[in-house]
Image (cartoon, rainbow, N blue to C red):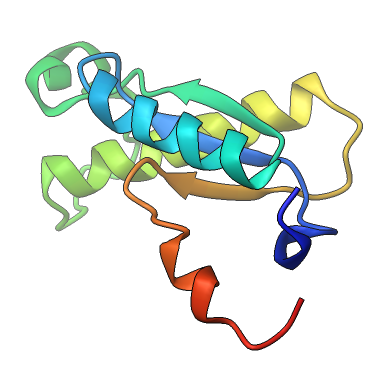
Length: 108
């Protein structure tokens, strides 16, 4: 394990099934740094908005469908994490994070 990541809690990585390259990149980073993670499959997309738009109760929201997608996927991932673990905390992140800057951190 990279000593700079000691004490980092489990990571929930939000990823869509179509983004295989992104998840492969993230998996390599997690493994390289010895980080425990869980992949959350994004279920809500812009293209299937018609199937899930009823989940949005406030019809006056002035958000883009993309922003609603990201928000509802995050909320769903929090619920799934909460219901499936006894962990007190974790980190939620998208599949576009790079840990490369940690090479320049001046602490271990």
